[in-house]
Image (tube, protein in one colour):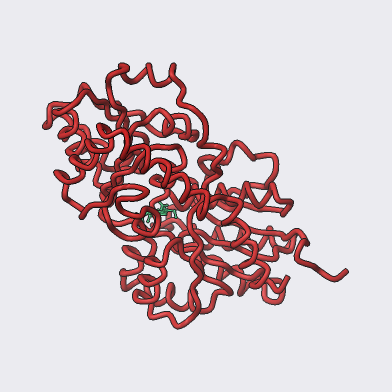
Length: 381
Ligand code: GMT
């Protein structure tokens, strides 16, 4: 039978299971692809965060690296390659899509070498610190540069990331930009008044930050900005997620004397209802490949104050669909936040523009076909 554009593909997706942006994008993509009729096989060392809603429609392959007294480091890369080989020999994958370069691109490369003529096309998507931080490591760089140069397709989540990738690895090849996406239906709808009442009194503004609390997210600045807002009007800060800087965020809240106004909510797989009850979202990061959480806020009708770094200016048009400020300028971000909270007209205009922007550029219906197109070209299907 001749394959046509509608032929379902057999797609392997490799990602991290933890609640970071790359794993979330990979998981949401896997679910969308399965919904569109493709056979999807997901490879990870644990069940990915946010996989639950579509579990029945795809196959999860756990990657377990052996432990042995001789092994000083986990042979995860080899175990991942071997798991991919074992699966591909059974189901003949058309495409293997790896999210986050380290060590997924080299594991895919190794699997393809073992599979030979049966190997799937390798598609790599680069998200952020895999290029901007790990990509700078001299021990990782040569293998990353070589495997990326020779993958069937490379995509990045913003033009900023494409430029950083070219510069970091000296790549000559084409890099396609495919942005992060959301299903707008998941974020639409009114705030849940009962949920909101659990966290804030009616007169209090709900300020939100959600991340994996890594240093690049600058959660101490989130608290600094919030404290400046809370000195001028009643407000609560909801912190969704956790990570290495959670203790620093708490210490900062104590130092600013706002710890009784800050709620550490921990990690939640279903964040949309929490986004919907917020009045302001803060993302003062030092860098962002894209800034998925800002997009989630925009989809939920929450105005965003963020730093003008990385891919964020490609997501938010400053002064139109959100407010951007130089990183570290907590005073300006607090002033911007207060304007959005206190000026109903500005707030309504920003929220409407942000929603329009999400619908015009960043919905799953627009973005997932971009990946399908890459897969078909890479696999010749
Ligand atoms: O932190 C990273 O660099 C890795 C990644 C993750 O898994 O947390 O996050 C990145 O990927 C997201 C999805 O593409 C982007 O929206 C985030 O901006 C990006 N984070 C950073 O660049 C800091």
